[in-house]
Length: 178
Image (cartoon, rainbow, N blue to C red; front, side, top):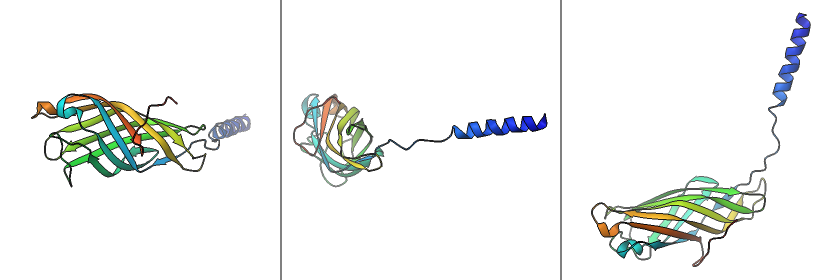
């Protein structure tokens, strides 16, 4: 009886261990870098004039490695220049087997001089990749659309919100549904 019990435990152990095997990965990695132009829509007065360009790198997901930033028209809410603001953000890039990329993006600009904070949220990212399973691809035709909010406790003209459109390396773009 003990031998039968031991054999049954051995069979059970082999069956459980066999469940832990994995199939080959179907995950694709995608990277992006370069300039992105951002257009804000909505708001009033100085809060409606904050279009900018930024440059960053990212692979798959995590914090953006921001390598450049500048307002086209900073106005009274922000100033351009070295150490005039700090920028941060995060994004995810999810590649499908059809070469379509979807994901999310958030981006925040905090003025070092005026107290203004610009937040881009709910960013829905789309684009394409040239990657395949096991080969990291590069994002192209990247477009992000979402919401923006500007807050400044000491200057009411630097408060507002609306929607934004962020385009990868192009001056005009449109939102596409994947």
